[in-house]
Length: 124
Image (tube, rainbow, N blue to C red; front, side):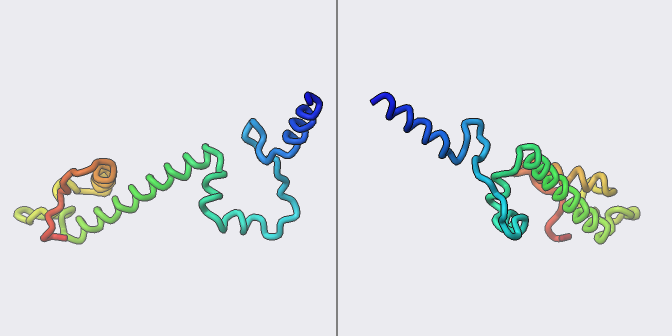
């Protein structure tokens, strides 16, 4: 009886799909268009990424959205004349006098919940 259990455990160990270390016991050779198939399923691609690449992807996404929305806020302030305003000009976007201020405003509004925007809705 004991010898059968030992054989069963050896057979089971050789048929593992995933080792105890977390590595796959699957050979992916001879697959046509492997890179295209790997990127076709974005969920599986993201799950199988190393944590360093996942972290880099997340940080890059945050940075790009901050830069994009900073540019949108700056363009809105520039279009409304708040950046080069003269005396007596009504201010539409308070505190945005350049791109750096718009970028910081973008980061602040994306990272906080429930903060009121400095833009009056009638100007937008």
